[in-house]
Image (cartoon, rainbow, N blue to C red; front, side):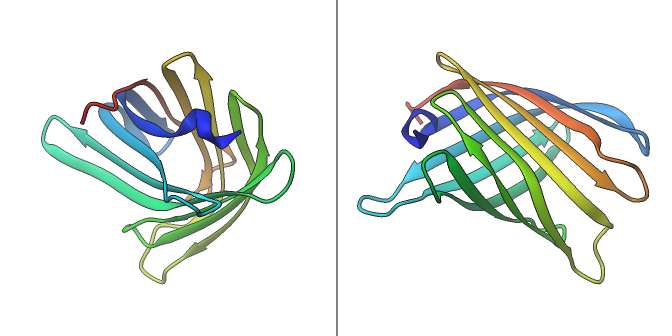
Length: 148
């Protein structure tokens, strides 16, 4: 089921949270497969008008008929271990274990959704952080672009 998500995706997104001013960004997200390995490699990068904003990397692996685990590391001092479900068109990761380094902003929980509509990937990122309850923080619409 994960093969539908393999590729390079590019587009735009928007960010919002009670503790920050809303912003827009450009995003490149890639899910790639290593031949013979039962997982996808994940790399995500965003940039704004003044240059790079964020990047993260990880691994997405099936662990049952419709179950997946996603391990993500971020240079901001967080790691996420997410678990959830997958269909041919949607990955929903709604169980999380977030670890924060001693210098990172406090993130207590996250949720991620990746939804395919043809060659378009819709993403959502929700978080409970810095004393705020779980709520949406990011949303993007990305188009498959494997010519890179």
